[in-house]
Amino acid sequence: MAAAAPLARAWAAPASTSGLTASELPGGLHLIAGAGGAVVAARGPEGAVMVDCGGADSAEAVQALVLQKTGARKVATLFNTCWRLEQTGGNDRLAAAGARILAHENTRLWMGTEIPSRWENKVYPPRAPAARPAETFYTTAPAVPLGGEKAEWGYLLQAHTDGDVYVFFRKANVLVVGGAVAGKGWPVIDWSTNGWYGGAIRGLETLIALADDKTVIVPADGALLTKADLVRQHDMHMAILTRLQTLMEAGKSTAEVLQAKPAADYVAERGDPDAFLTLAFKSFWGNVRQFRAV
Image 1: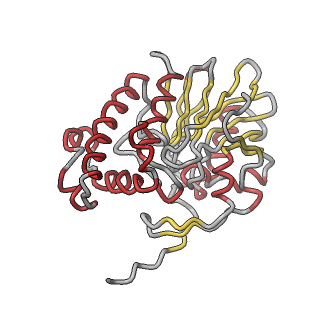
Image 2: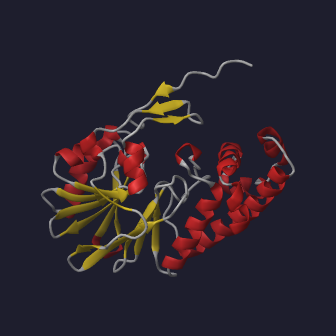
């Protein structure tokens, strides 16, 4: 057997320092795209509040645009929806400028250790201590008051990582979901940090229960979504999960799973599913006991 290729060391996720775009969301919130992952910003009593901050390469430009759009003098609070660099690349800069960083405890733990991500052929080194979340929770988190608004946040269990959270601006009816939901293409099931496909489906169920027909749902990439979009995604993923379960229980290999084309019904809508199916199928191995609970 050939030796596995060495894992490359990774730090900054690719992100352009130009080409950022800002658009308005309900309730005076702002959506910034083009930074690697969607950034949502609001004005709070102590300064700007951000949900995710994009990649490291665009951190300075994102910070400046957030301050411009919110009229704040500083970024006071930053939510990380997971550990991945598309969402947290600007942590270092914002922490140095005095922002407090909030996340799930698993996100803090992953950011404090080396992460060998074999499906990406990368090793993510630990983040600087100051860039790690300082305030975390395990199961429930108190809402963050923002004057007339508040940011409610909660845990999505094992979704695309094991530290995914949502942030819900209740009055504005804007729900920010990070990488736990795909706005385009297929979701990333990062089994290197305990994401798994069944958990991602449960995460969709949590979000569907939170939303109403007027909720604006902001994924990390792609178009804004509605509750109806989440319901359609949930139905699609349940159909695919059932097929993958059958293939796994039949002892099929990953190559045989791809040959069986369990996502063929959705290729026209979502594109080539092979990378997604590979991640989803491999995520099963650490979660065999949970299959029948999904």
